[in-house]
Each structure stands twice: as structure tokens, then as C-alpha cells.
Image (cartoon, rainbow, N blue to C red; front, side):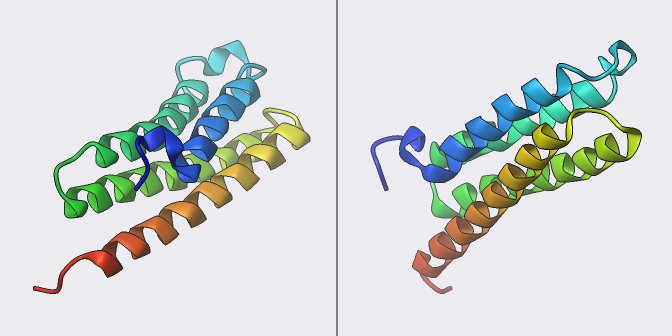
Length: 123
């Protein structure tokens, strides 16, 4: 592993996903400030935060668990992006960018989880 969670490509992409989510939701209706806007922003922040928290845990098992939480938050955000699109919120390019980043982060999380599991000793 690198010196910091900040060295992880998946964390870097998760930060990009978070900033894209904030840009996307900035144009949502004011009535959604405490609804979908808040939910999407919290889910996006949770992805990067769980990657970082897992990295700082004591065992690989805990790390994998937090990566699973991050992937769950990514799936939550992906669902919310579908809802936003169906409601006509956000621009098509911003939605597409966020969806692509979400898919990319989810794929990277799965690969990292598989790699860490392969390195764990068998019981």
C-alpha cells in the first residue's frame, strides 16, 4: 500500500465523484435542498470517507468492510442519479459524467476488495 489513502486511485476518483455530485445538485430545484440534493451529496461524501476510514483501520478485514460500505454508498448514489434523471433534474452531460464516475468507482472498489481478500490468510 501507499503512504496514504490519498494515493489510492479509487479514493481520488471518489473525490472527483463527490465534486461532480455537488456540481450536479447545485442546479436542482430549491425544494430539493433537504431531499434528493442532500441525499446525493451525503452518499457521495460517504464513498470517499469510507475508503479513507477503512484504510486507517487496524485489519484488512475491517478495511474490506469499509470498502463494502463505500460500494453500498456508491450504489445508493447510482440509484439517486436514476431518480434525478427521471425527474428531469440536472443536465445530461453532468448526469452522464456522474454516472460514469459512479460506475468507475464501484468497479475499482470491487477490484480492491478482491485484491485484499486474496491476500488474507485462510482460516
